[in-house]
Amino acid sequence: MEKLLLTVACGDYDRTKTLQDGTVQPEGIRLNYLPLQAEEIFWRMSNFLEFDASEMSLSNHITMVSRGNSPFVAIPVFPSRFFRHSCVFINADSGIQKPQELKGRKVGAPEYSITAAVWIRGMLQDEYGVKTHEMEWFVGGQEEAGRKERVTLKLPSEIKVNPIAPDKTLNGMLESGEIHALISARAPSSFVKGSPKIRRLFPNYKEVEMDYYKRTKIFPIMHVLVIRRALYEQHPWVARSLYKAFSEAKERAIGAMLKITNTHAATLPWLFAEVEELKSLFGTDWWPYGIEPNRHVLETLIRYMGEQGLIDRPVKVEELFAPSTAGEFKI
Image (cartoon, rainbow, N blue to C red; front, side):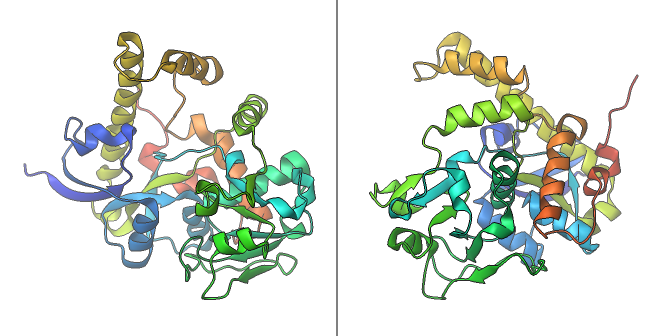
């Protein structure tokens, strides 16, 4: 029987390498894997449905599900996870020394709805008492002018979101002091170049993030894998096949990391210590797929999205994923 040819767009990750090189092959599928940047994938998939399956912003997927108009069905594969305390940048002349001093300030984000921004706003509220409506939001291109929201915003009146001028960038506005802070999935170029005007709100972010995980057990999920709904309805078995293959690829990546550690094959002097620290903090799987190992994280993100005006109704975790990926069969 001829295999089904599917094009999947996803990042160039160690946890997907064996899918890219064909070592791992989904059952019944001939995979055409396109390793692309996330922003390009999201834009092409959201606007044009160019791929059979792709990486997708988890917050955007949840918003679409809440509105009942999602063209996608997801599987609980999470290609991107990231602690975000490192992603809050401050203008050094703003006088901001601690998170609570963000109240009443002008804060930029490439898009109000991006998952990184949702997590950061939620963390600021839960950890430091800074609520979303207590900041004024400015959205637009971080490095290039003209970026737009991928989803239509329908926010409560107390949340103020302003598009920046079409010829400006958030990076430039942060450095000039037109905005006091920036939250983003990427460090602004002014910071990367060493501008004395820009600093991190949490300079000791690794220490803060480790403490945050120990207390909350949240390793924030950024992206999910989605399948075009029309394809899923025609071939529902594809969901489970892709889920199994992506899970195997991830397990192989973690296994390879442990093997490298044991054989000193990587040119990193403290890799062994890093892996030991990971195991002591997370256990043997620090990048879990599946619904149940991630339920607490997913429910927290859904709560944040409700509090930030990004969903039209409460969403249950099970609504986000193909039913066949919700559990495991037993023999």
